[in-house]
Image 1 (cartoon, rainbow, N blue to C red):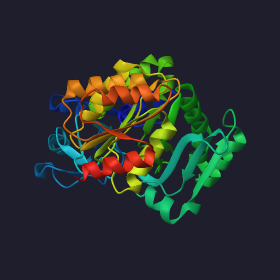
Image 2: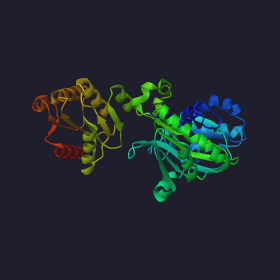
Image 3: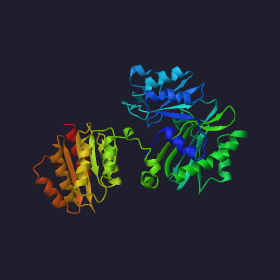
Image 4: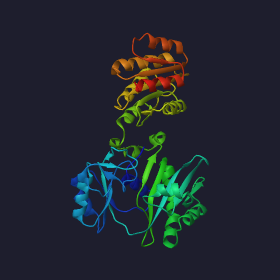
Length: 395
């Protein structure tokens, strides 16, 4: 689960991390109060969407201007003008796709006198099996270019069970922190680790972490995502969820305990098992088409769950065909067949459907589909299924 920047900063601040004063804005009526709350003379107006690259982003609507999703304002009038241009408009970044995301929230924050911009993130390093810090002296909006062009400027430091004084010292050295900034860093790195582990974060990114002109460190931007499997331990975090930032199909899928991720292709996929789902998506790409989704119904789904998954896939207007690829182990092929038939009847399916079944009760499953009288294309194996759905979509 992702949260907005202002929410992430509030979480980090509760652990003692240094962040600027700021006020979230949900409507234009909140802007004046936010401006009056902050001292100025510099305010930063930030679009709040679940996507990175906001500073370099562009709004779809011409009336939103060309300044991007993060803007400096030197007067209260400028704050209000920028807020009017941003709220309700669609911001396109490298992570949103061409349609962009509508800006429904802003964060108005105190400005800062920046001396240096650094990069810091914390994540789980799967190679070492430990929590790892990733840091660079080259923070800011071009960190992706740094990672691509000069990866030697990025250091990864796995830590084991906590940030020791030696760990913090290594991070300070990597970020070239001296004096007051080094003192702050020795305090900050354990704080961020504690927040990451205690709140079951999947990723914590501070970009930039700044050294201000007075020598102190400040978390200038924060991006946080949480391990969805651990959210039952954190009802306070669950309350921060903004469903308007999520795909409606993914929200509905989560209510059925389905693993569903919307993609940009034209062939809908319903599969049981993450590995089989990835293989299905790969072979669709091999034959020249793109998957419209990742959908894993799991190993023990019943007829209702299968039907729900099918209907969710059909809600994507880009879907031109559907491939059902099921290996019946715990899940029986006849149950899958019944769910597919029920869903086809309920949705008045108007696109090609290819079904490949294998495993427990496979012959019974195939018979149910064959006897349904519906226009369903049967496939013998995954390669056959992929070719048939690609050919069907292409007409």
